[in-house]
Length: 425
Image (cartoon, rainbow, N blue to C red; front, side, top):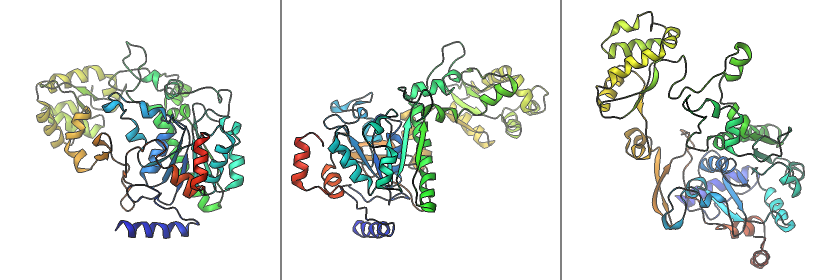
């Protein structure tokens, strides 16, 4: 079956103008992007997570890494079984790894050779780096006019901050997210994940899909310029408009949003917090019924969205006094019976046991040569006809050098030996 799938995939790719084989991957690439080749340059999360998304949906993502060093994410992770980090198996999954010194002219020549058959080049260096290496979009588009160049950076490719160093935390701060996150009695907090980097990567991936559509229409590639601060800003709802038109600055409010009630975390008898969202008028009416106090739905203090917002604190106290007498399982059942959105605040252990996660295969297990059978999130979103898959965890450093620099770039075994000796690969 796998042989037949490979044959079909190669036939499809020939129709697209070239053949893209399976390389040395352990399973066939499937998904809507199975005929797309991506060169991933850069490190950390903001660029590589975009590469992961593309690879998850079938793209052949060739990650280029510094010889002997590799992406720093190979060393990141709280727990390190066998002295190895656990971030890379997820972030590097479904990718091919090839080593290359892009600072050397011969390394730059190899990149240009790969660009001939690539659809996308993804980088997240500080703006100006690719130009300094002779790898500007102008240079590369002369080789391949259809090439899409995804450029992820802290502040974008233009403007007075363009060449500043920028991490996700900085983009979260400048884009407005940090100011609105946390308890109002404390300094601004951060999310427990690198959300700014991931938002930039997701926007970059979205931009790439738009650009690919344009390639189909016009035959011409373009640059996707995705900055961290703008990607965060894009998620900030109406905070700018609220201030500009109404003089209102959104502040930190902890576990709830101001004027959105009831929508908060509530205590239970077994000390498990439950998030309940009943802020829509019709849902609040059902909530009042579930509480055994249907009169609250027509009480002038709570009857409308606006009134509940004004009386938000006392309403949350009223609901908390009710929820604290229920075991969480009993409370969940009662709320679900009345059609009221609710959910426990999950950690990893709860996610692994949750029946909805299991039914949706939201978490899967992947064999790893060192860690054994490890759990990680599955590919999202789900597509009804061309679903992506996790084919393998993050590869070893330079694991696919022979395929990339031999088969794709056209170098002989002797050529590769010389490149290795010189530290180019």
